[in-house]
Image 1: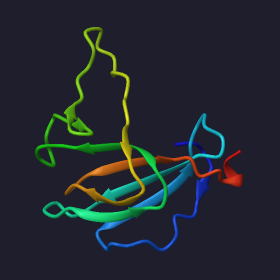
Image 2 (image 1 turned 180 degrees about the vertical axis):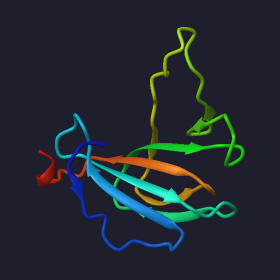
Image 3 (image 1 turned 90 degrees about the vertical axis):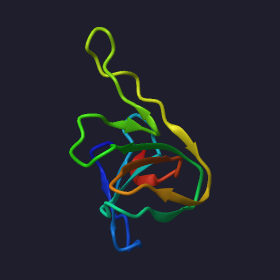
Image 4 (image 1 turned 30 degrees about the vertical axis):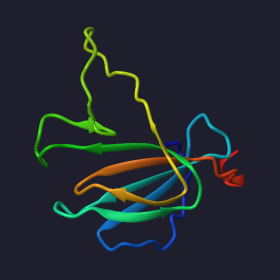
Length: 114
């Protein structure tokens, strides 16, 4: 996420918090951050365009392990953070797992993000 903060608007569902910022290094693109606060239930949101998705989950809320798009994140042999690979998210309804944090990179052609 870049330094320019955008208005995420009035979005639902109730247990999800949304934040939007221009995407660093991708002029015109917007990163939408969606945090599902509900620890037991998934939530559904509507994407108005295709996106690149990065969803962070954990087996338990206080777990030492973190998954990115369903695969456990592990440090490299040198102790570095691995390259983060997004997953394609198609336009339409998408599910947010319980207690998850998701970043959606949208090619929005937003004039505030040029």
